[in-house]
Image (tube, rainbow, N blue to C red; front, top):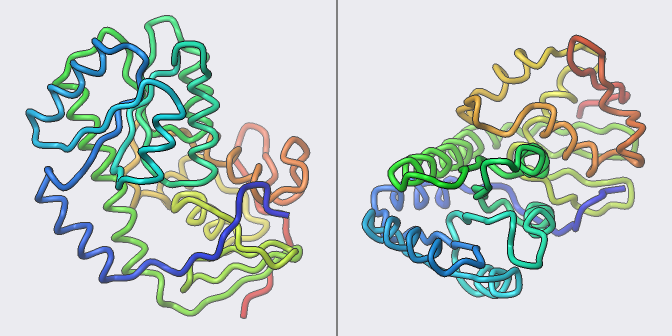
Length: 266
């Protein structure tokens, strides 16, 4: 059963992709949501983003962030992990389960464990305090560029009509949908769907991390990107009955991963 909130989702449209690409040349059409409980940090980030002609929304807590996300188009969110008395990691986890909005974490110098956990939960990058605004803007642009590149790959490759089934699951490539054994469409991000597709196309084959990175090269991976291991962990949480004892995506110690499901293609 899908281990994430599920919904009906149509495949990506080429028309939508073209509109996204056209907006990339109009920075002002992209809004960034700053989630931080420190007014001084929010003011610093706002000034830097507005100087680059981004639209800016601010939230001092998770409730305000959720309200903005529910009512406004948000291209990317910066998130302070130490969100006052709240857990920024929980907000990142909840958001990633429901949306594919890019997340850049803001962390303190000594928060290495939180950074690792945040990346595994689905954050796209992190920035340590104190930061240089020029670097922040560069990282924001890089993450947005990767997401547009991913949508480009979807728009070009989706209409091939292939379908796969395994262990009660159904994978429709053209519609970019993964349906669990109960018949419910599972909410997979673009990267999660692409990784699952890579596995079902190569059942039983051991894939090293380097091979997986090459196969996912359309996402413009860099050392700052979420790790392959983190991406596998998130996919397992959604498709495995027990993610701690995976039966479909097996770890081959010292090598990589292999898909153990019995796959049928139609």
